[in-house]
Image (cartoon, rainbow, N blue to C red; front, side):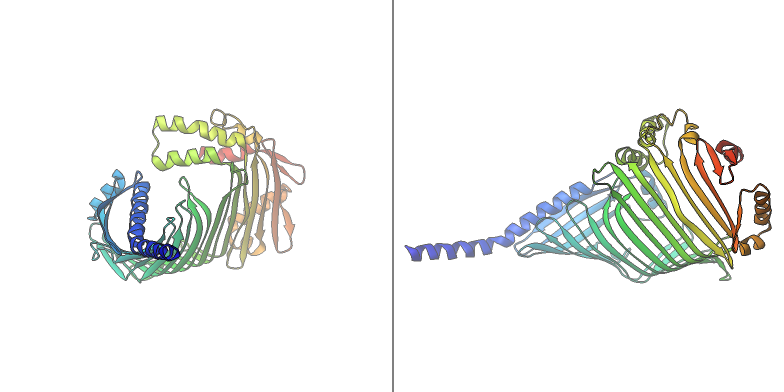
Length: 420
């Protein structure tokens, strides 16, 4: 009897081992079918054209079609396809599926992806674009890239962890102008929410420049960085976001050279539900009609009614030896109701502070700044500091309040800009 049990156990194990690749193939097909069905949106539609499932391997042909009418029209105008077929060769492992995928029309775009999907649906992937040369006669431009790569992993819940490497890109135009991009790298961890990234992202760029037909620089960014972090509070009802931008050197289109540019911006305590509704409406229809505007307004009212905070913790840059720095903080308190019906209510409801610094070298460099500083000195609204000038003020009750006690209505300061 014991021998029969052993033989039965061994036979069951062998049967399971023999059937398991079929089970993996079936589970994998279900995961892929569900994934394709869930990816459909107003921009792209995915479908399985053919699924040839075998014992140890399968071959899948999927099609991705652009359905957004505006994007579809633009692609057709540029002579680009609006539907893409992808062939995937799958291997059935013990606990996962591996897939090597490529576009059926590989000559158009030499793009390939290697992925490994666990039976719970979580996937690790590597996306490679080989050296690519593309010419668009309709637009009068050509584009060429060195090999670039995106790697990462994504869960069935949509959480994504990725890394990007783009060594170089060059765009040439018929008029002789060129765009050069060098060493763009980045990484992120989070998920795509309703029109925004919920999580962390960081990017760095060695150089981006635009030159004219004589190779003279028209625009330049060197040693630039970006980092962003958007998160929900523990209760899940408030959004907090931080943004940092920096560049060692900038050359603007008017020929102005800027050094050591820094921007540290944050927004806090934003009502997540109304913000999601606003982003969803804009994402579905960037050009709002009257009906959509009426749908949007109650969510804007709710956003302001719940209150939030905005702050520029640092905005600084240099023009040669001249330095500029600005900081400001604004707070819209909870209970600022019906703002769309009475926008001027923001003037009295908002509170905060601001601080601005000009170095002596910057004031000497630009006469119009010198004139403004002289006027503010006469009014005792700006203070002379070591190596520069500093202006500080508080914002409350619809007024800008300076340290010497003088007050100015915000509307009086903003009216010239609004009129213009």
